[in-house]
Image 1: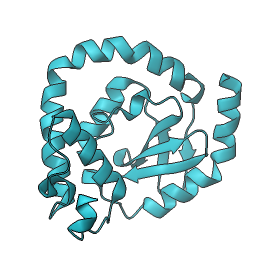
Image 2 (image 1 turned 90 degrees about the horizontal axis):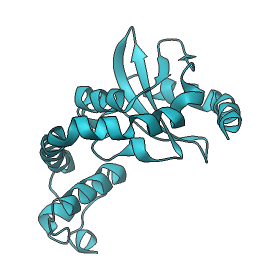
Image 3 (image 1 turned 30 degrees about the horizontal axis):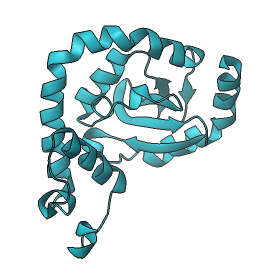
Image 4 (image 1 turned 45 degrees about the vertical axis):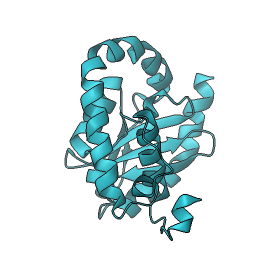
Length: 181
């Protein structure tokens, strides 16, 4: 409500929501217009994310070991999956460490916001010639891409190809999901 009163334009609701969750994590008053109606959501998001990653780095090894087995059990049906498009190859992120590294490399919050803990989510990496271009959050219930983000949450020139490739393979992913159940 505060953001609306300040005529804030929600251009990227997912990034705004992640920023509010990060702010809450640090005990920041999210009703403060500085946070809920920022002049630049990317700057706010990146500063909070940097702070969270620094905090996480201290707990990293313990967390990685603790959750690796559960994540592996979740991702196991998809480990061999490789989706190939004209320019793009999409592969699952196979460990919590890979999710962590993807977040660090792409400068976004796939790890920090714990997307890897969600049971109904499949995390994938879209790559072109071996270079990571976008990280994909695929909802296993709706069989749709929830979000696909490139470096610093930007969309890339391959974004539409990535979405089309994911849509074209949704039924194949559903089959793998059924086998796992």
